[in-house]
Length: 356
Image 1 (cartoon, rainbow, N blue to C red):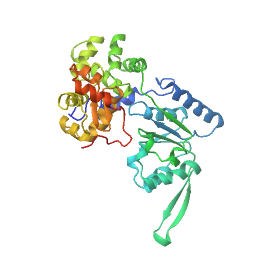
Image 2: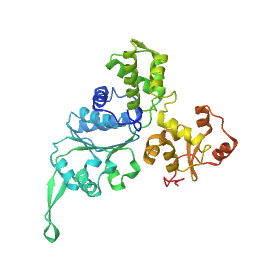
Image 3: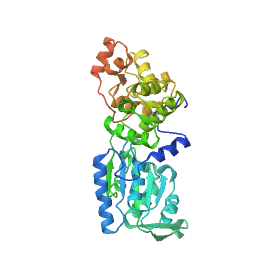
Image 4: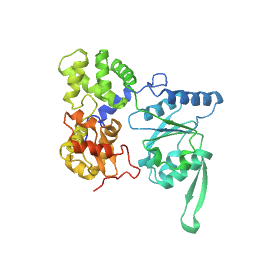
């Protein structure tokens, strides 16, 4: 684990990804949480099977780690159809998309992760493919160029995005069903962990599950990753059944505290409170203070700190809240109280407030 890659980050090694795949539920009945999306999606798929047609195109949005890829796999399994997986960044030319679309079989499910990062020419080709199951292949250049229509078999596109606001309206409107995934409650994460522990043949009591779930940021992917680290700790220490104390000791060793904050999160809060008196301070200055890239602080640490009410973004910069001082066990000075009281918390519309 590198300095810039905390345990709660979304990336993982090949072995970890293989285990994550094994823990994925294979049908909607086994999928824990997201009750509203599950009910709606189940209705869409069941109606498609009754009509004997391919399912409508599906757009899944929400933060990383909540199950968008898993739901795409479940859609293919429920429709008894093959699954093709690609991603927006991998499709930089219309020809890339045409090659994928022309090789699809009837009823196949095409999953495009991070669909908002697809190139504009490919995006425009996708409009016609989704609506008319047809693409126009351009042959030649200049005045001699001709468009050759290519008919496509009916297919289901499942798009996933962590930033739905970046999707253009014409693309978003072509999806027959849109589901937004929410962060999980602690009780739901405990159910996820119980299923994973059973598959990994782990013995964990209720208090142990609650301890891991409470540190998982409302995200199943993180919960499963922390559970595997607790498993490793228990294996090395010869512990057969994991309780709250064991889970706490294991996760403390991996620098994930009781609130789910990792090393980077605490470094950001500590620098904000001790070096800048609680703020306000610009993002780039704060990033330099913790020795990280600006993008790392903004995309990895900030979202969770803001969601937990530990950090605020104001027109003048980032500020620490009273909860941040309390979490670090530090006394909040009077001028910090004043700054926090004058701040407007949450994400700025321009996304760069407080820049240096």
